[in-house]
Image 1 (cartoon, rainbow, N blue to C red):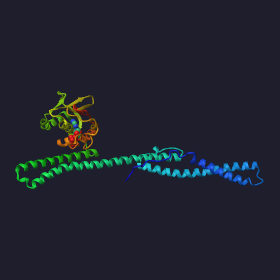
Image 2 (image 1 turned 45 degrees about the vertical axis):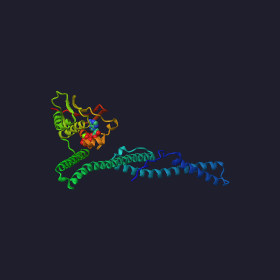
Image 3 (image 1 turned 60 degrees about the vertical axis):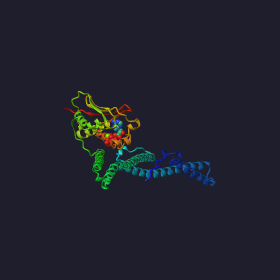
Image 4 (image 1 turned 180 degrees about the vertical axis):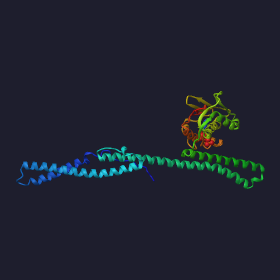
Amino acid sequence: MKFEGYAPCLNSEPYKMSLSPRFIAFLIATLITVIMLTFLSFVPAADAAVLFVAGVSCFVGSYFFIFFTIDILVFREVNRIYENVQKLKIKDFHVSKRTLIKSVNPLKKLNTEISAYVTKKQKEIDELKRMEAFRREFLADVSHELKTPIFAAQGFIHTLLDGAKEDPVILDRFLGKAAKSLDGLDALVRDLVTLSQVESGDLRMNFATVDLKHITEDIFEQLESKAEKRGTKIKIKPKELDSCFVKADKQRITQVMTNLIDNAIKYGKDDGKIVVEFEEDKKYYQISIEDDGPGIPPEHLSRIFERFYRVDKSRSKETGGTGLGLAIVKHILNAHNSKISVSSRIEKGTKFSFRLEKANI
Ligand SMILES: Nc1ncnc2c1ncn2[C@@H]1O[C@H](COP(=O)(O)OP(=O)(O)OP(=O)(O)O)[C@@H](O)[C@H]1O
Ligand SMILES: [Mg+2]
C-alpha cells in the first residue's frame, strides 16, 4: 500500500462569502425580485409606490425563505456527517466525548474534527511505516548474524567429513573451531531471547538487595584471563569501599555490568586501564565504567544502543560481538528506572554511567 502524498486538504474557511447561504439567498432573492418587477412594470395600474412595496416584500420574503431552506438543509446534513465523524473518532482513538470540538458552526466543527482525525490517522500510518521498516531491518540483521556462525560450523564439519578427519591435528582444530562458532550462535540466540523478553515486557524483574561491589568482583574474576591477554588492569574505586547495596535484579544487573566491563576490555587499548567507580549520594549510587581506549566517534555515540549496531564492524567481528549487548543493557536499566549515559573522547577513553537506588539495609 502506498501512502505518499496523502495529506489533508480541507478548506479551513467554509463560510467564505461566495459559499454562504446568506449570499446565495441574497442572489436568488434579487433575481426573483428583478423578474417580478420587470413583469409588474408592464401592468399599467402598478405605479411606483406599488412597485416599491411589491419589490421590498418580494425580496424580504424570498430572501428569508431561501436562506432558512438552505441553512436548515445544510445544517441538518452536515450535523449528521459530523455525528458520524465523532463516532469514528471516539471508536478509533478511544477519546471521551468531552474532548470533541464544540462550536455552533457545524461546517467549521466538521472541518476541524476531520482535520484532527486525519492528522491522528497520518501519525498512526507514519508509526506503522516506521515499525515495518524496523521489522524488515531487524529480520535482515538477525538472519545475517545467524548465517555467519552456521556457515562457519557447517564448513568445518563438511571439510572433516570430506576426509580431513583422518589427520588428528586437523580433526581437533576444526572441531574446536566448529564448537566455537556454535557457542557464538548459542550466545546470540540467548541474547535475542533476552532482548525480545525485555522489549515485550515479558521479563519479570526480581528486585532484591544486591551488593554490586561483590558482583563486580565476581565479574572481574570471570573476565580475568580475557583482560590478562590484553594486559588490561581493572580496578574498583574507591579502593576502601566495602559494599554497594542497591535495589536490583541480581541476574540482570550482572548482565549489565558484564557487558560494560567486557566491552571496556574488548574495545579498550592493549595494556589499558579500566576503572569501575561507585559514587554514593543520599538516595542513589552512581556507577561508572571507564576505559582509556580509543573512544567512540561522536557520530556513533547515539546509535550504539541500537540492536546490532557496531562502530567498527570488522573489528567487532574479530572480537566476536554481535552488537546486542548495549541494547539489552539499555532495556534492563530502563526496567530499573534508570538510564545509561555515555561520554567518550577519541584516543582518551569511554565512560558509561548509570545510577541505581540504594537499598535500605
Ligand atoms: N568501551 C567501549 N569503547 C569503544 N567502543 C565501544 C565501547 N563499548 C561499546 N563500544 C562500541 O559499541 C558497539 C556496541 O556494543 P555492544 O555491547 O552493544 O555490542 P558488542 O560488544 O559488539 O556485542 P555483544 O555485546 O552483543 O557481544 C561495539 O561494537 C563497539 O563498537
Ligand atoms: Mg558488548
